[in-house]
Image 1 (tube, rainbow, N blue to C red):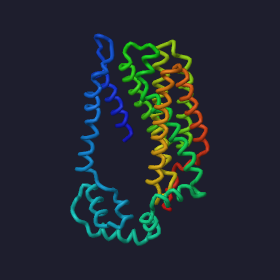
Image 2 (cartoon, helix red, strand yellow; image 1 turned 180 degrees about the horizontal axis):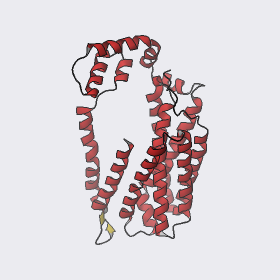
Image 3 (cartoon, rainbow, N blue to C red; image 1 turned 90 degrees about the horizontal axis):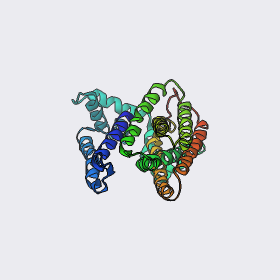
Image 4 (cartoon, rainbow, N blue to C red; image 1 turned 30 degrees about the vertical axis):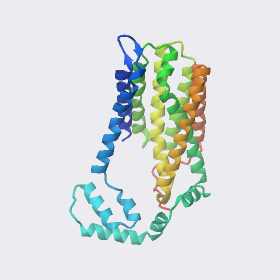
Length: 309
């Protein structure tokens, strides 16, 4: 699924160059941004319609909410057999009877209870480390991605939008790397390696701004590492929390990630005006390095049965 994210990133870079850059005059077209925004927003609108028409609710969620008829219908629709199956419904109801504690905990989970659960002694370590990683990875990843065009301009690229397309394309090897190794290596190791290599490429970027070719190599390596890190941290986050609080915990991690992205964009906006590109890249590299150190502290759960409570 993550592969389609990099397809969207690449498409956005291509559309941006088509609308915001005049290749003949070799200049940006800032007045065209409203049209670019409309075109860039179309996929989201189309996807919302497709989700409404074809996406089914999670059978597990419906079962936990004791909506057994809907859970059975959802499973049947997912299997391609929309006909009613009383045997399947009976099995779902019997399963719910066998796991009453899970259902009760899920039904009674409000925001305060969710916070207390993820901050409990058994989960506090995972929560703290993953919140830190999500914040720092978003801080470094989105901080560079949002300002990559400006960064290429400051380095001296005549066509920063073409360079941005190459930068977006680097997500592909990152996805290949993560997909190939996420089940072979421990998830913790893969995340640590990806973050550490990303930090190294950011630091290398600081000393390569005089060579455009080296800039492209290092920034593409960085983007590949960020993509690999995201794929791995998503898997680790979903496996680190019990079922009754998993979605809640994922939402909390996402909020920390969004906060990191906001902070980095505000900070980078100031730094690009008042400081050098090197300062931005150095801070980015430090963020990735700290995240790598934090990842080492995680307990690897690869191949283990996921907890229910």
